[in-house]
Image (cartoon, rainbow, N blue to C red):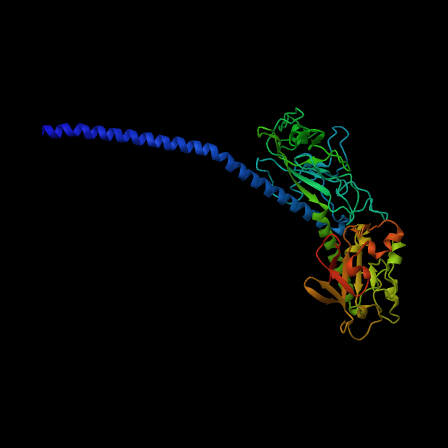
Length: 478
């Protein structure tokens, strides 16, 4: 018994020491885990925030391009127009976007993304801020000049150039808004911003995103003036790097020295001195899509005309280059199988000298007869018809092509035949040290100033290839 009494205290001491050691180990594990959590959670959050920002910017860009493509011609909307920004944080586009507000100096063409107008959810960046947006003067919805001359001034088509300058985060100018040369590969027509967290701008302005008391409505919409909540200075940042000075809160069209700069930009300690993240919409993003819509609408019109019973699968005479170059109203040119879309069809109808001759008017579905948008694109749009589908007075059978009478379209996938083909000219190219020109009547009557490869031969052989430095025609067939 004495021996067993001596053992029990020793076991109890061991047990107590073990428990202490266990608690120490648990404390160390908890301490290490807390340290690791504190160290790696911010990095994980930063990555997640960057993903949210990238997704929101991409979704906004896609919606803006869709808006530009969805013009309703019957409502006299212009193909390619982008909405004005939202100036009061309502989610709705402003009714107009001129240069600046005379009372506040705020640009009408920079504001929040009009997410409600675009049919989007309330997009935010990774820091919970709504996106901002700026639009070039040449692509804004209102107010704009009309397309009334053969030059591109006032027109929005494949030759229209964006007017916004962009610099890299190192200050290098990569898009020059002052360059008005339509042969330039790409130019910037809109910018979408993720503003990120509030910072102290390099010009000393401490960003404030409050409603400043009574100048915001209960809904958070800015009711008047330019309160902090709706002032781009409180969201978009300023940088000075040597001779480069850029303020993302404002810009000037057609200027190489006042555009936007890509962020983020960090100081030597790794702190953000400009945290705006930008995504661009360039002419390269948008114009080929606009050209394709023009081509599809034109083809739909031609097919609707040919499918009318009296037309027997025949198409109107195109307007010759010489005829369309000399007149704002393009006439159809008898015995001409390649040219621009005619406004009048008198020569086509005159081909039939018996009752129920070919129609002298375009069908109602023809988009080019609706609104004023067509004035922007009629110079760039051509079509060709097979030799057996030319106007004639109605025969007892439908026109068909075969035995070498069809159009032939060559592409990377081989050769195909067609009864009709629509060709829309892309932007002007600089070929063999000679730039395509589309200004004078002489320029307009020269097919080489519009089309490339076999398309410029105005024959029955056409070319359809991906866009490259020496070819950018859009060619579609039924």
